[in-house]
Length: 262
Image (cartoon, rainbow, N blue to C red; front, side, top):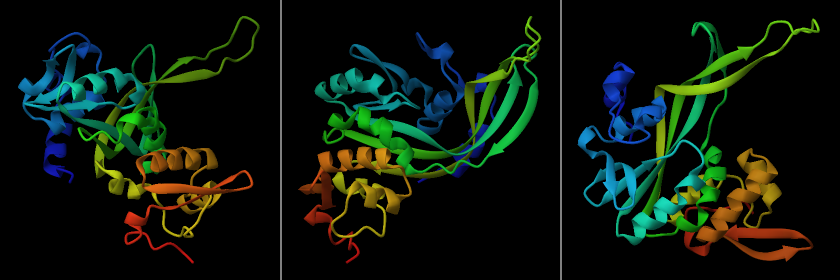
């Protein structure tokens, strides 16, 4: 459940008030990461806490929260260590629901222009990242929390001008930070049933990856990746092949939640 009052309170504070220099690497943290630490855990005493060989983003008694905006594969060593040491772990992964692009001049730091990019993010945006930690998703001590945000994506423009040959150089942009300005839904993935959020309506009782992609409104490669995760967790079953096509169906334990289309 989103805490809108907490969100509004934090967005009104300057970065300096949110940031804490608690250890190596904190000075290079991006705003969204710092913001989420403060949003999820108000007590700074629980931020950047040493937990054995590693430093946890948030550690509250025996529960660790790691915030990862991308590259969840970088967490694999940490996750295994924490859970084998007996910690319960939550991985928080924010997903941009709508991005507002803000272009900044790399030399002056001035805002050149703002552009609304109507990207409607969805839970499926998390699939490529979840795939990177697939083999941890069924561990009892791990849960994943997906959070939808609307963000201003700050992009630094560089280059441009005219080359020595007289050709006009194209300016390139590099993302430097993301600033949340609205908060959406969250989803906690703790057991195979929670992954039903990735199963679209309108599927036949037996379906292929192409059927799944069409019903979900995603690409076939993303459909394949989603079904790979759902099959691993037992949410769906790959139960036969027709030629080279894999045929799937829902796990019988979830058929009450998923009727399917005859």
